[in-house]
Length: 365
Length: 176
Image 1 (spheres, one colour):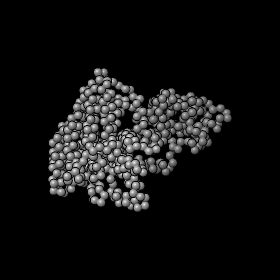
Image 2 (tube, rainbow over the protein chains, first blue to last red):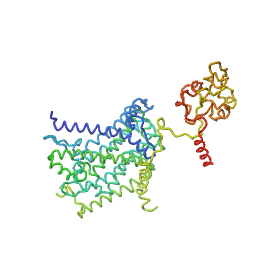
Image 3 (cartoon, helix red, strand yellow):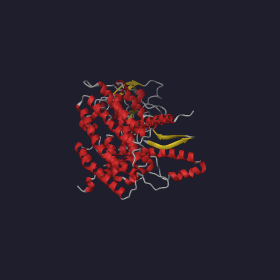
Image 4 (cartoon, rainbow over the protein chains, first blue to last red):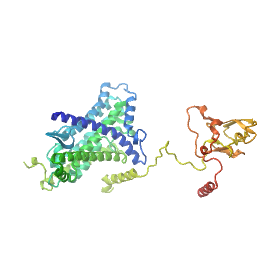
């Protein structure tokens, strides 16, 4: 049975959706195990082998908890908040290229939910929508701690989105495209010696990485859910699976942020010597099989990069204490944004004097 | 502050390297039901009523342990040995019932010191397990008397072997 191209893409979207959920599920487990290991403990190991069924047990626990609505809460918005957080988190992974393409006969399947020429802009738009989930949830709770947490989340996300966007502009100046697939492909061109963007944009990567921590509300920037000051921040009043959805959305955001960083700065599905390997396999197996094998290895490569970043997110969480709110704002506005502007100027100068040749033909025109 | 200190990043990487070292270090956890922490050789745990080398109960129900007990946890009823029970009880008098209330017991070991027949011991490798009901903590003879089969007997509790006594005294002088 031959699926039309749209059918294949729908299948890919479903798989990406499933993988996002699976990774978010096991991120909760990984977080606990990594936290334990960093603190010389062993973490959850009772449910199933190595505690691998722990997420399942947690889900059952969350589903069977009492579903609580605070008095005076706006019930509709109270439910809508976590849903929005979850939906926006899940939407972002649609444009991320998890692999090049697979070829079955004449059908070519791109291992990407949907290829749009404004992919990066789409990710930014959807991720910044995510803060509405927190805002609405925090406001609808009718609780001053929730509201303060929500306000913090909003102002923090807006502040760090600026620096993040400017760090990204430097990358876009070199690539000349917003398409994530194009950006990935440009980081490894056959026959040419092309480095991953991290080599060309080290400052940009550091800024982007710091901002990614702030955007996903992870320690050291987890002020919206600062326990010491705000009880639980925006999810103080949430219980049961609505609480679970907020936690889940955070892990999906971590996954998306990791994926975006891998794609933008670490070459996405490219891995060293892939073209040499492809040509070597093509000698015996034919070009199509060789490309398919390279694509599958590329998927493995991109997931290794993503998992490394997720590990880094957790590693940082269990190392650094939380920032103070004024420190957070000062870091964002007086250090990261000027640094990002400097990075844009530096990149522009390097392109102008041809130290970094722009890859795209768009630039030449 | 120097520039390196103000730049955050060097300090952050220093912290990350410390936590990463702990990631690979030996874990302090003891997985309790499967693994147990080794007890001290002088640990005073659950009581046992010993038998002698012929398998007869040593206890003669003299009541000295009950007198010595500061928590008044021990009660007993004495009885006279009948003819034909010589294989069961060593002395002419024996304990018909012997109960220790583990909720009262403070595991001081004074009963063990008071016993003239070397019958009651506090095992060094066994604790009174938790229960749901209070009356389950009153241990009768059924749970206190040592089983007859010698290989299922407690490995500790009776006098230390000469080697054990030596290592123990060496340990004690070391700490003192």
